[in-house]
Image (cartoon, rainbow, N blue to C red; front, side, top):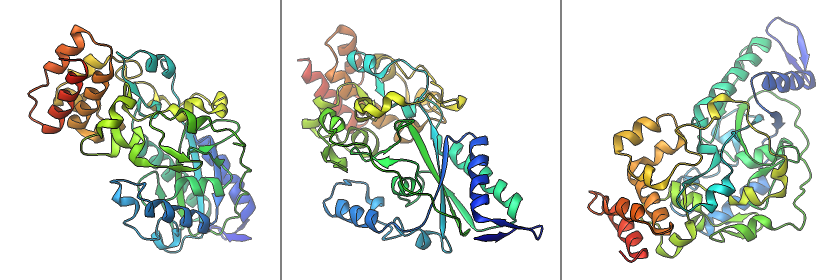
Length: 357
């Protein structure tokens, strides 16, 4: 496989692929792979998941037809996909300790620092520009959780890891605490070989899920998933699930915490993923007192910012309802009893009732 470079010299596709991996590492990615566009199995699995209604209110999962599983329909001319992963686990208070303290806010580790979308897209674009500097202009488009792309399926196909029973990508050398990104390209590059899966008979992630959202290996009912309930769901959280949420106010890492492969998870070296605003162990009462302006200012550039202040208060109200009863907790809830938002008031009333107040 020979590609023509802009200086009239040719380069072997295998050699270019090796250079792309090296350039990716130089840009801070922890691994880079190459996939072809064949996602037939993933397409069938996605359709079955959508038919079962497991996507809940995430209508965007079904709104693009087959573009999600057929890369060339999304970006015409695509024949290869460059995939990349970047570790995000920061130095932070141990999540197990935070979960054990009902007065603290448990926030998914990926959301403790800067929003990853812009950072990863910028790095992927730099990688694309580095390729273009070597071979000349080529067709491409970069993605990071920002379009109808089957990221895990592509990463799996490119040899970056295997899909765990919790549906996240897993690797033997780094667990699952990492972000994924892609470059769709018209370059004909040699695809990497997928890895074998190494979950075996383990079902730790299924057993630990607080809401039993992993209804079968490799199948998550998002409507029960705490990440969905605290991030994607716009309305009221179902009452029967509220006690199971505990003190988790944004996302849930329980399936990752239970996974044996995360013994090998590596800390990020990316400064932008470092903890901001003390979010790794902040108190629920403290966070509940933030005004809308404080929320916007303190969380500017953070992934949490996108849920807005109203849902932020909704989530914390549920956590306060599950917290140990104290004068501080009751006073915090009482301070929001007459909040302008009906959504907030309803969850505050539920939380107060939980404490018999």
